[in-house]
Image 1: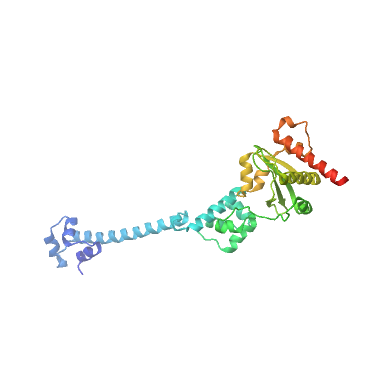
Image 2: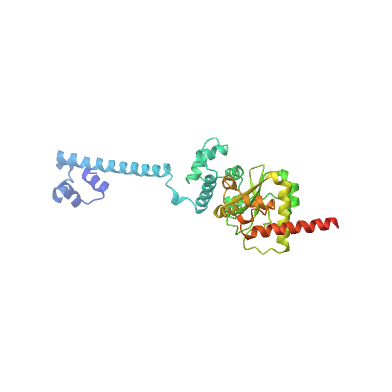
Length: 309
């Protein structure tokens, strides 16, 4: 095959287009059917055109390969990551944030040999297997169905078995700490929080009406006396806590690690005075405070009379 035909085939051009590129007439190209009529200059020019075309193809392939490598190396493959993977990683990031961990320190906490596996999962370069997910769940002691499906809350772990404060007193040796918690605005319930020996937190089911806007029926009054008795029986193992409303709501949402919130809590002097039945400080608090003291005192008197009878 004549060299000019090879050029036309390689570049995908006609003889007329080749003539235009070389700055010669089409008639000259046609005369090259006899290869002996191709001048040395034209021969060199045609050979260079084929060589340059081949080099261009090679460079193009190298550039495509480099682009693909860079996209993989930088983790720029979000478009190919599934929605489930993206949501899973967002939940994992939330947990690492709550425990104030980086990918490296989280991998160390999980007793991984290195941080490569966790890093690849977090940057969408690798799907986690179920062995890894179970390890993540057990390490950070979170709710499995939350991590896997996004249902409920990450720290919705229930371990308190008691259904009465008397039972809770019997169970108290199972806990490292007990907190009685209320909000600084006194517009919501007072609650009991327990921390077990694994460092998990759970909330006692029953709430207590200490604050504004509560209607104190017989049940609420009885619960208040039970809380008073519970505190008196276990006061040296209980911390009285006041939280700002935002922190209070975060704690009981179970979306956040309770230790981060309770670590910097304020002592509740209001609850301290209340359980001491201290009427001298009534003026420091709102009307509900004295009302609660009166309820407790009244019920203590009834108990005393019933006992004497």
